[in-house]
Image 1 (cartoon, rainbow, N blue to C red):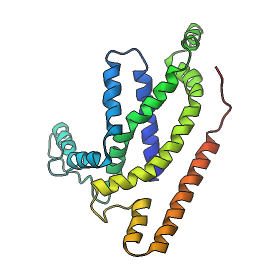
Image 2: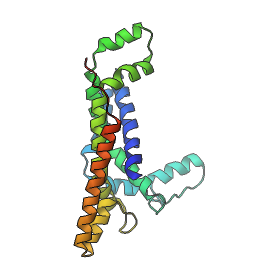
Image 3: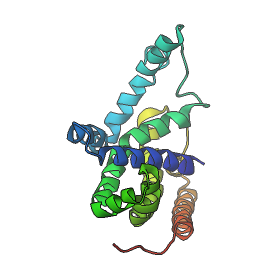
Image 4: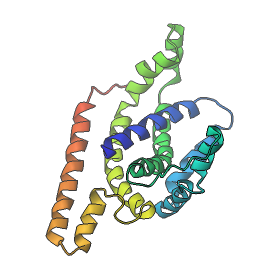
Length: 217
């Protein structure tokens, strides 16, 4: 569930931002830089940053929510019920700019005359996206979906280590390392094999489900 939900949350905003910044809006170079910047920051720095933001006592997120609610809001963002949501928020913020740039590169390769012809035929922006842009960048989207699955498994472990107190949350790799630290080396290796098979099978399933004929320009 964690892998599926976090990947959907990554894909949709990254695709939306790529569409917006692929247009001739003012200052788009600055926006691209600011959105891409988190993807080059160390995971530990991002973990420390979001630990401060999500602090229930004086964190920025609760302060903003308190301002709009008109009363004091003290959500325990990193307790057992909310910890996975908190990790997903940090992961999406870190990864969204990287995938946005990949989608923008694919969109920039789509010939402009296709959009001009579609406009003359009466197709609006939404119709052009689903009938021209999306089919022509579909191969890139399939590739990034595989990246999503692999990176989510790795990144989840790093963010859990950086943001969450020991024992508060477990993902696949943190569970594997916990078994190793307990001296259960065989059990740890077995967990690693299961994680590999899970990521491999999920990637294969996604590639199978999203397979379609390649469109050439």
